[in-house]
Image (tube, rainbow, N blue to C red):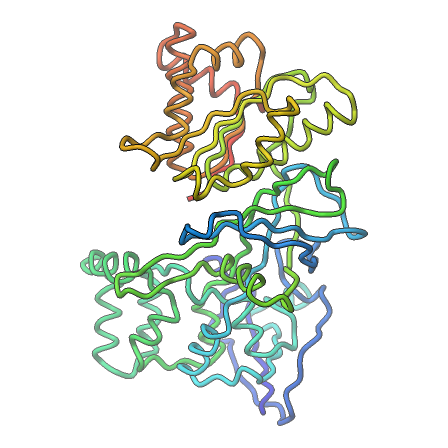
Length: 447
């Protein structure tokens, strides 16, 4: 087996965090030895957060009905004795590529996944003491491909242009160059973007691509953390963090299924109990309950957007029942496809209603009737009540979910302010903007 030394230069390339200049790259075979698992100091790892932890999974359960082809998981992580979090903070998860994807890339390019790689600064790095390793060193090729390379994510046309330089077949080269050009942008859109092709797929569709490891790393973007809003209150659950995660699966044009890198990694924990931990770190969230707990709140969280709302309701329940505080009215708008299929946390919401923590629950089941109904539709129907909460009572608004939904919800609020508050459209927009600036209108959305 081989140990490789790869010299690098420090710079910025896309989301790699590094740029690897050809004239300063060198691959040196140092010696032969039996490969071993690398256990490098954590401080050598170039990550966005220094508070990286590996937390044990206490509970993992399916929230949807078995009749639903989709999957939404409720996960509880043990943080006892490690660190503290704030209610509805964000949790960053560092995903790992599945082993089949790693093997596909390694086999296609002829890499030995057990070979050990050492990294160091190249000649172009003037201040070598400031060099930061892109990953722990030494490290196996398999670890690098698994933990640090985005092998399935979306590509840009410029990526295909770079890959064309490593082809040995003229047909492969011509195809990549054509799709990377302005003239080929429609072909790129239909074949690569709409076809949901990642780097691993391009390598297999263009079998003449041949590149040494260091050059591959210069092309391949870094695998980024995924952020999920914590669905638990730190007052109620100080020793555990709860997550609500929809498992991503998309059917491609060729009929194959593409799973999300991070959610597939998480789902694998449900299949194999031996894989009972995740690499995570905390990131502050914008979701915070009003300092004055008597203020009413309006929460809009369809699907997994309910995650922070569950955390806020847990906190308000604790304030009411344990701390004996006077708590303002709580209103929740939740939506999903079918009441019997994917109405997640239904039992918990029933309890919050019965105990008086959740005062109003508005449900939009988009597929339970001929005409689709969404949360923004219900919001518009309750215009008078909503305006009273916003303007007279000084309420706070929390929105979590998809970008499209978020835009529709903001539009509904603007219409409510304009109609109920007798304002022009521009004045209504200013009203909502002022709420946002004051921290009374908070959104966390994803594409």
